[in-house]
Image (cartoon, rainbow, N blue to C red; front, side):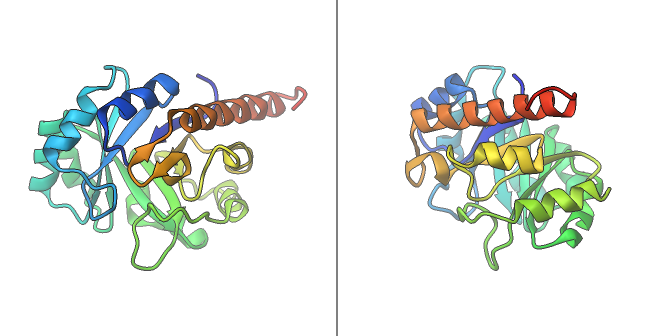
Length: 222
């Protein structure tokens, strides 16, 4: 699929997780941290078991210790762990999962976050005091794009979250050109309940904008 990969986060219902995969999501996320979308290990396992084998399974954690990460990775067959707050990337690698780190973007200094040198993906989200994502707040895409263009890109790949929805994801992709876009509230009926049609529209918007950016970069008509 052209364009950035799509992760839909905060799933709580197995049928909706499968619908997200069918709609074009590359990854589905479950939240183990305090949140209206928080699930137990058993709930998360049921949600993720509904996915086809090619869909990435992401566990989202805040200030998680090694035991919590290991238990969730084993019980839920996670392929990726997404860390917020205290993020010990090397310790998280003991799970056998790829390691993503969420970073609040409040200026170019955010690109120098210690985890940006070692994580497989840095997920830039809006910087909201006391919160670790899931706020629905949009960050300054132009500022992030400028910082990335200045040569301060993380060692791994770049993800974009925060206030994305089917109506603005194409613009976000054109401006930032991330490797992955992450959506939660922007495709929901209410917290934790996803609308498959909004997910499909979101995936199509990301894919179309990515294709257009690729044509423009190659010197074609964009």
